Length: 390
Image 1 (cartoon, rainbow, N blue to C red):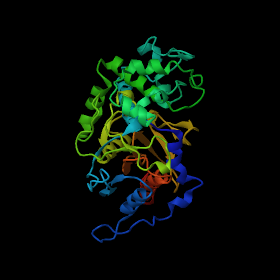
Image 2: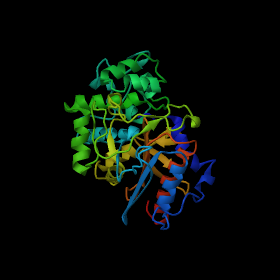
Image 3: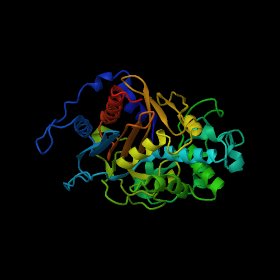
Image 4: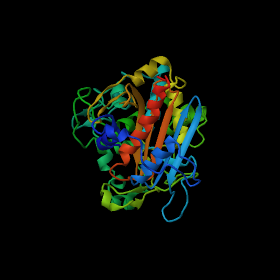
Protein backbone atom coordinates (compact mmCIF):
# COMPACT_ATOMS: atom_id res chain seq x y z
CA UNK A 1 0.00 0.00 0.00
CA UNK A 2 2.58 2.50 1.12
CA UNK A 3 4.31 3.14 -2.20
CA UNK A 4 5.73 6.59 -2.84
CA UNK A 5 7.18 8.15 -5.97
CA UNK A 6 10.53 8.14 -4.16
CA UNK A 7 10.33 4.37 -3.77
CA UNK A 8 9.49 3.74 -7.43
CA UNK A 9 12.29 6.05 -8.54
CA UNK A 10 14.71 4.40 -6.15
CA UNK A 11 13.88 1.00 -7.60
CA UNK A 12 14.10 2.23 -11.16
CA UNK A 13 17.16 4.47 -10.90
CA UNK A 14 19.31 1.80 -12.48
CA UNK A 15 17.65 2.22 -15.88
CA UNK A 16 18.78 5.83 -16.13
CA UNK A 17 21.48 7.99 -14.62
CA UNK A 18 22.81 5.34 -12.23
CA UNK A 19 23.23 2.57 -14.79
CA UNK A 20 26.66 1.94 -13.29
CA UNK A 21 24.83 -0.01 -10.59
CA UNK A 22 24.45 -2.77 -13.16
CA UNK A 23 28.11 -3.66 -12.72
CA UNK A 24 28.51 -7.10 -11.13
CA UNK A 25 28.11 -7.04 -7.37
CA UNK A 26 31.24 -7.32 -5.25
CA UNK A 27 29.27 -8.84 -2.36
CA UNK A 28 30.40 -12.13 -0.91
CA UNK A 29 30.75 -14.74 -3.62
CA UNK A 30 30.77 -17.78 -1.35
CA UNK A 31 28.12 -19.06 1.04
CA UNK A 32 28.58 -20.58 4.45
CA UNK A 33 29.37 -23.91 2.80
CA UNK A 34 32.30 -22.40 0.91
CA UNK A 35 30.79 -23.11 -2.50
CA UNK A 36 30.81 -20.48 -5.20
CA UNK A 37 27.70 -18.30 -4.98
CA UNK A 38 25.50 -18.01 -8.06
CA UNK A 39 24.28 -14.72 -9.58
CA UNK A 40 21.04 -14.64 -7.58
CA UNK A 41 22.87 -15.29 -4.30
CA UNK A 42 25.31 -12.48 -5.06
CA UNK A 43 22.43 -10.10 -5.80
CA UNK A 44 20.68 -11.05 -2.56
CA UNK A 45 23.94 -10.58 -0.64
CA UNK A 46 24.27 -7.11 -2.18
CA UNK A 47 20.80 -6.14 -0.95
CA UNK A 48 21.60 -7.45 2.53
CA UNK A 49 24.94 -5.64 2.56
CA UNK A 50 23.13 -2.38 1.68
CA UNK A 51 21.45 -2.43 5.09
CA UNK A 52 18.41 -4.74 4.84
CA UNK A 53 17.80 -6.96 7.88
CA UNK A 54 16.51 -9.89 5.85
CA UNK A 55 16.20 -10.62 2.11
CA UNK A 56 14.67 -13.38 0.04
CA UNK A 57 14.36 -13.71 -3.74
CA UNK A 58 12.99 -16.28 -6.14
CA UNK A 59 13.19 -16.44 -9.92
CA UNK A 60 11.13 -18.80 -12.07
CA UNK A 61 11.53 -19.78 -15.73
CA UNK A 62 10.73 -22.75 -17.99
CA UNK A 63 14.00 -24.27 -16.72
CA UNK A 64 12.81 -24.28 -13.11
CA UNK A 65 13.21 -21.93 -10.18
CA UNK A 66 16.07 -20.52 -8.18
CA UNK A 67 15.90 -18.92 -4.74
CA UNK A 68 18.28 -17.25 -2.32
CA UNK A 69 18.10 -15.63 1.10
CA UNK A 70 20.33 -13.59 3.38
CA UNK A 71 20.15 -12.00 6.80
CA UNK A 72 18.09 -12.95 9.82
CA UNK A 73 14.40 -13.40 10.56
CA UNK A 74 14.74 -11.47 13.83
CA UNK A 75 17.90 -9.63 14.89
CA UNK A 76 19.56 -11.03 17.98
CA UNK A 77 18.05 -14.50 17.62
CA UNK A 78 20.29 -16.06 15.00
CA UNK A 79 17.21 -17.36 13.17
CA UNK A 80 17.70 -17.55 9.41
CA UNK A 81 15.23 -16.05 6.98
CA UNK A 82 12.58 -18.76 6.49
CA UNK A 83 12.43 -20.62 3.21
CA UNK A 84 9.55 -19.07 1.24
CA UNK A 85 8.47 -17.04 4.26
CA UNK A 86 5.27 -15.04 4.29
CA UNK A 87 5.17 -11.26 4.16
CA UNK A 88 2.77 -8.39 3.62
CA UNK A 89 2.91 -7.59 -0.09
CA UNK A 90 1.59 -4.03 0.17
CA UNK A 91 0.66 -2.42 -3.12
CA UNK A 92 1.33 -5.56 -5.13
CA UNK A 93 -2.21 -6.38 -3.93
CA UNK A 94 -3.47 -3.80 -6.41
CA UNK A 95 -2.71 -6.23 -9.23
CA UNK A 96 -4.98 -8.81 -7.56
CA UNK A 97 -7.78 -6.25 -7.19
CA UNK A 98 -7.51 -5.10 -10.80
CA UNK A 99 -7.58 -8.72 -11.99
CA UNK A 100 -10.83 -9.38 -10.11
CA UNK A 101 -12.44 -6.26 -11.60
CA UNK A 102 -11.37 -7.30 -15.10
CA UNK A 103 -12.81 -10.79 -14.59
CA UNK A 104 -16.14 -9.18 -13.68
CA UNK A 105 -15.89 -7.03 -16.82
CA UNK A 106 -15.32 -10.15 -18.94
CA UNK A 107 -18.40 -11.75 -17.37
CA UNK A 108 -20.52 -8.73 -18.30
CA UNK A 109 -21.25 -7.84 -14.68
CA UNK A 110 -19.77 -4.36 -15.03
CA UNK A 111 -17.77 -2.14 -17.39
CA UNK A 112 -14.52 -0.23 -17.07
CA UNK A 113 -16.44 2.77 -18.35
CA UNK A 114 -19.06 2.59 -15.60
CA UNK A 115 -19.12 5.66 -13.44
CA UNK A 116 -18.24 5.14 -9.79
CA UNK A 117 -21.60 6.69 -8.93
CA UNK A 118 -23.44 3.78 -10.56
CA UNK A 119 -22.11 1.33 -8.00
CA UNK A 120 -21.43 3.63 -5.05
CA UNK A 121 -24.06 6.37 -5.19
CA UNK A 122 -23.13 9.45 -3.17
CA UNK A 123 -19.89 7.95 -1.81
CA UNK A 124 -17.43 10.03 -3.85
CA UNK A 125 -18.57 13.60 -3.25
CA UNK A 126 -17.04 16.76 -1.83
CA UNK A 127 -14.13 19.13 -2.42
CA UNK A 128 -14.37 18.66 -6.17
CA UNK A 129 -14.45 14.85 -5.96
CA UNK A 130 -17.44 13.57 -7.90
CA UNK A 131 -18.16 9.91 -8.58
CA UNK A 132 -20.53 10.91 -11.39
CA UNK A 133 -17.50 11.97 -13.43
CA UNK A 134 -15.02 9.21 -12.54
CA UNK A 135 -14.88 5.82 -14.27
CA UNK A 136 -13.79 2.46 -12.92
CA UNK A 137 -10.92 2.51 -15.43
CA UNK A 138 -9.69 5.80 -13.95
CA UNK A 139 -9.67 4.26 -10.48
CA UNK A 140 -7.51 1.34 -11.58
CA UNK A 141 -5.26 3.59 -13.67
CA UNK A 142 -4.79 6.29 -10.98
CA UNK A 143 -6.19 8.96 -13.30
CA UNK A 144 -9.26 9.73 -11.13
CA UNK A 145 -7.82 12.71 -9.28
CA UNK A 146 -9.10 11.28 -5.97
CA UNK A 147 -6.70 12.16 -3.10
CA UNK A 148 -4.69 9.47 -1.34
CA UNK A 149 -5.83 8.26 2.07
CA UNK A 150 -2.31 7.32 3.18
CA UNK A 151 -1.44 10.60 4.98
CA UNK A 152 -4.50 10.15 7.20
CA UNK A 153 -3.42 6.75 8.62
CA UNK A 154 -1.48 7.40 11.83
CA UNK A 155 -0.17 3.83 12.21
CA UNK A 156 1.68 4.09 8.88
CA UNK A 157 3.25 7.49 9.35
CA UNK A 158 5.08 7.61 12.68
CA UNK A 159 6.38 5.33 15.41
CA UNK A 160 4.04 6.98 17.91
CA UNK A 161 1.10 6.55 15.55
CA UNK A 162 1.98 2.91 15.01
CA UNK A 163 2.14 2.18 18.73
CA UNK A 164 -1.18 3.93 19.35
CA UNK A 165 -3.20 2.63 16.40
CA UNK A 166 -1.66 -0.56 15.03
CA UNK A 167 -4.74 -2.56 16.09
CA UNK A 168 -7.32 -0.05 14.89
CA UNK A 169 -10.00 -1.28 12.49
CA UNK A 170 -11.14 0.90 9.57
CA UNK A 171 -14.12 0.37 7.32
CA UNK A 172 -13.79 1.16 3.59
CA UNK A 173 -16.54 3.76 3.96
CA UNK A 174 -14.61 5.46 6.76
CA UNK A 175 -11.46 5.56 4.65
CA UNK A 176 -13.19 7.10 1.65
CA UNK A 177 -14.92 9.66 3.86
CA UNK A 178 -11.51 10.72 5.20
CA UNK A 179 -10.21 11.11 1.65
CA UNK A 180 -13.22 13.21 0.65
CA UNK A 181 -12.16 15.87 3.14
CA UNK A 182 -9.31 16.70 0.77
CA UNK A 183 -9.49 18.65 -2.47
CA UNK A 184 -9.28 16.56 -5.64
CA UNK A 185 -5.82 16.41 -7.17
CA UNK A 186 -7.00 17.16 -10.74
CA UNK A 187 -10.04 16.74 -12.97
CA UNK A 188 -10.74 13.07 -13.78
CA UNK A 189 -8.63 11.93 -16.72
CA UNK A 190 -6.57 15.13 -16.73
CA UNK A 191 -3.55 13.89 -14.82
CA UNK A 192 -1.94 10.96 -13.01
CA UNK A 193 -1.40 10.54 -9.28
CA UNK A 194 -0.93 7.41 -7.18
CA UNK A 195 -3.81 7.05 -4.74
CA UNK A 196 -4.59 4.09 -2.50
CA UNK A 197 -8.14 5.41 -2.19
CA UNK A 198 -8.75 4.35 -5.79
CA UNK A 199 -8.32 0.72 -4.84
CA UNK A 200 -10.37 0.99 -1.66
CA UNK A 201 -13.18 2.15 -3.94
CA UNK A 202 -12.47 -0.71 -6.37
CA UNK A 203 -12.84 -3.18 -3.47
CA UNK A 204 -16.15 -1.56 -2.52
CA UNK A 205 -17.37 -1.87 -6.12
CA UNK A 206 -16.41 -5.56 -6.21
CA UNK A 207 -18.54 -6.03 -3.09
CA UNK A 208 -21.48 -4.15 -4.60
CA UNK A 209 -21.32 -5.99 -7.94
CA UNK A 210 -20.94 -9.51 -6.53
CA UNK A 211 -22.62 -9.30 -3.14
CA UNK A 212 -19.46 -10.81 -1.65
CA UNK A 213 -16.52 -9.13 0.02
CA UNK A 214 -13.30 -8.21 -1.76
CA UNK A 215 -11.53 -10.81 0.38
CA UNK A 216 -13.94 -13.57 -0.66
CA UNK A 217 -13.66 -12.70 -4.34
CA UNK A 218 -9.84 -12.64 -4.26
CA UNK A 219 -9.84 -16.06 -2.60
CA UNK A 220 -12.41 -17.56 -4.96
CA UNK A 221 -11.05 -16.10 -8.20
CA UNK A 222 -7.27 -16.08 -7.66
CA UNK A 223 -5.95 -17.71 -4.48
CA UNK A 224 -7.91 -20.98 -4.66
CA UNK A 225 -7.77 -21.60 -8.45
CA UNK A 226 -4.00 -21.05 -8.50
CA UNK A 227 -3.40 -23.04 -5.33
CA UNK A 228 -1.59 -20.16 -3.61
CA UNK A 229 -1.28 -21.93 -0.27
CA UNK A 230 0.89 -19.21 1.32
CA UNK A 231 -1.42 -16.36 0.31
CA UNK A 232 -4.21 -14.94 2.46
CA UNK A 233 -6.35 -11.89 3.13
CA UNK A 234 -6.00 -11.32 6.89
CA UNK A 235 -9.06 -9.15 7.49
CA UNK A 236 -8.55 -7.44 10.86
CA UNK A 237 -6.05 -9.96 12.22
CA UNK A 238 -2.76 -8.20 13.08
CA UNK A 239 -0.65 -11.34 12.71
CA UNK A 240 1.30 -12.83 9.81
CA UNK A 241 0.36 -16.53 9.79
CA UNK A 242 2.86 -19.30 9.12
CA UNK A 243 6.64 -19.01 8.83
CA UNK A 244 7.74 -15.40 8.49
CA UNK A 245 10.44 -12.93 9.39
CA UNK A 246 9.72 -9.86 11.51
CA UNK A 247 9.51 -6.47 9.80
CA UNK A 248 11.15 -3.20 10.88
CA UNK A 249 10.42 0.42 9.96
CA UNK A 250 12.21 3.71 10.56
CA UNK A 251 9.26 5.91 9.47
CA UNK A 252 11.51 8.03 7.29
CA UNK A 253 14.03 8.77 10.05
CA UNK A 254 16.94 8.16 7.68
CA UNK A 255 20.02 5.96 7.59
CA UNK A 256 21.15 6.95 11.10
CA UNK A 257 18.01 5.48 12.68
CA UNK A 258 19.26 1.89 12.53
CA UNK A 259 16.76 -0.81 11.66
CA UNK A 260 13.88 1.00 13.34
CA UNK A 261 11.17 -0.65 15.43
CA UNK A 262 9.46 -4.02 15.07
CA UNK A 263 6.21 -3.40 13.16
CA UNK A 264 5.26 -6.99 12.39
CA UNK A 265 1.88 -6.75 14.11
CA UNK A 266 -0.58 -4.59 12.17
CA UNK A 267 -4.31 -4.55 11.50
CA UNK A 268 -4.28 -3.84 7.74
CA UNK A 269 -7.98 -2.98 7.38
CA UNK A 270 -6.84 0.44 6.14
CA UNK A 271 -5.46 -1.32 3.05
CA UNK A 272 -8.45 -3.35 1.82
CA UNK A 273 -8.12 -3.58 -1.96
CA UNK A 274 -4.90 -1.58 -1.97
CA UNK A 275 -2.45 -3.57 0.13
CA UNK A 276 -3.85 -6.06 2.65
CA UNK A 277 -2.65 -9.37 1.22
CA UNK A 278 -0.07 -11.70 2.77
CA UNK A 279 1.87 -13.93 0.38
CA UNK A 280 5.22 -15.53 -0.41
CA UNK A 281 7.80 -15.00 -3.13
CA UNK A 282 6.84 -18.34 -4.68
CA UNK A 283 3.11 -17.56 -4.70
CA UNK A 284 3.70 -14.10 -6.20
CA UNK A 285 5.77 -15.62 -8.98
CA UNK A 286 2.97 -18.08 -9.71
CA UNK A 287 0.39 -15.29 -9.68
CA UNK A 288 2.25 -13.01 -12.11
CA UNK A 289 3.14 -15.94 -14.38
CA UNK A 290 -0.54 -16.97 -14.54
CA UNK A 291 -1.69 -13.39 -15.06
CA UNK A 292 0.73 -12.41 -17.84
CA UNK A 293 0.48 -15.91 -19.30
CA UNK A 294 -3.24 -15.41 -19.92
CA UNK A 295 -4.55 -17.94 -17.38
CA UNK A 296 -6.51 -15.46 -15.25
CA UNK A 297 -7.87 -13.00 -17.81
CA UNK A 298 -9.37 -13.23 -21.27
CA UNK A 299 -7.19 -11.69 -24.02
CA UNK A 300 -9.29 -8.52 -24.26
CA UNK A 301 -9.04 -7.85 -20.53
CA UNK A 302 -5.32 -8.63 -20.39
CA UNK A 303 -4.82 -6.08 -23.18
CA UNK A 304 -6.74 -3.52 -21.10
CA UNK A 305 -4.58 -4.26 -18.08
CA UNK A 306 -1.30 -3.93 -19.98
CA UNK A 307 -2.28 -0.83 -21.98
CA UNK A 308 -0.31 1.85 -20.19
CA UNK A 309 -0.23 5.61 -19.80
CA UNK A 310 2.59 7.85 -18.69
CA UNK A 311 2.95 8.03 -14.90
CA UNK A 312 5.42 10.91 -14.53
CA UNK A 313 5.13 10.87 -10.73
CA UNK A 314 6.77 7.43 -10.78
CA UNK A 315 8.95 7.58 -13.87
CA UNK A 316 7.20 4.57 -15.44
CA UNK A 317 4.11 3.78 -17.49
CA UNK A 318 1.08 2.39 -15.69
CA UNK A 319 -1.77 0.17 -16.81
CA UNK A 320 -4.54 -1.22 -14.62
CA UNK A 321 -2.83 -2.38 -11.45
CA UNK A 322 0.47 -2.95 -13.27
CA UNK A 323 3.52 -0.83 -13.93
CA UNK A 324 5.43 -1.12 -17.21
CA UNK A 325 9.11 -0.74 -16.42
CA UNK A 326 11.97 -0.18 -18.84
CA UNK A 327 14.71 -2.80 -18.85
CA UNK A 328 18.33 -1.65 -18.95
CA UNK A 329 18.94 -4.12 -21.78
CA UNK A 330 16.04 -2.78 -23.88
CA UNK A 331 12.33 -3.47 -23.89
CA UNK A 332 10.21 -3.56 -20.76
CA UNK A 333 8.50 -5.80 -18.24
CA UNK A 334 5.41 -5.64 -16.03
CA UNK A 335 5.33 -5.60 -12.26
CA UNK A 336 4.44 -3.76 -9.09
CA UNK A 337 6.31 -2.81 -5.91
CA UNK A 338 4.73 -3.16 -2.53
CA UNK A 339 5.52 -1.71 0.86
CA UNK A 340 3.68 -2.04 4.15
CA UNK A 341 5.64 -1.15 7.29
CA UNK A 342 9.02 -2.75 6.82
CA UNK A 343 8.06 -5.38 4.26
CA UNK A 344 9.24 -4.19 0.83
CA UNK A 345 8.59 -6.34 -2.21
CA UNK A 346 9.19 -6.01 -5.93
CA UNK A 347 7.58 -8.37 -8.46
CA UNK A 348 8.39 -8.45 -12.16
CA UNK A 349 7.46 -10.59 -15.11
CA UNK A 350 8.26 -10.82 -18.79
CA UNK A 351 5.35 -9.85 -20.99
CA UNK A 352 4.36 -13.46 -21.61
CA UNK A 353 4.79 -14.58 -18.01
CA UNK A 354 7.43 -17.19 -18.80
CA UNK A 355 10.04 -15.68 -16.47
CA UNK A 356 9.28 -13.95 -13.19
CA UNK A 357 11.31 -12.50 -10.34
CA UNK A 358 10.24 -11.56 -6.82
CA UNK A 359 12.42 -10.11 -4.06
CA UNK A 360 11.47 -8.82 -0.65
CA UNK A 361 13.18 -7.28 2.35
CA UNK A 362 12.04 -7.01 5.95
CA UNK A 363 13.27 -3.50 6.73
CA UNK A 364 13.70 -0.11 5.07
CA UNK A 365 17.41 -0.75 4.58
CA UNK A 366 19.99 1.84 3.58
CA UNK A 367 20.20 4.48 0.88
CA UNK A 368 21.21 1.92 -1.78
CA UNK A 369 18.74 -0.83 -0.86
CA UNK A 370 15.99 0.12 -3.30
CA UNK A 371 18.42 0.40 -6.21
CA UNK A 372 19.85 -3.02 -5.34
CA UNK A 373 16.35 -4.53 -5.31
CA UNK A 374 15.60 -3.02 -8.69
CA UNK A 375 18.92 -4.23 -10.07
CA UNK A 376 18.11 -7.83 -9.11
CA UNK A 377 14.79 -7.86 -10.97
CA UNK A 378 16.28 -6.02 -13.95
CA UNK A 379 19.23 -8.41 -14.28
CA UNK A 380 17.07 -11.51 -13.95
CA UNK A 381 14.55 -10.36 -16.57
CA UNK A 382 17.30 -9.09 -18.86
CA UNK A 383 18.67 -12.63 -18.72
CA UNK A 384 15.31 -13.77 -20.07
CA UNK A 385 15.69 -11.42 -23.05
CA UNK A 386 19.15 -12.78 -23.73
CA UNK A 387 17.54 -16.24 -23.90
CA UNK A 388 14.97 -15.04 -26.44
CA UNK A 389 12.04 -14.72 -24.01
CA UNK A 390 9.74 -11.76 -24.71
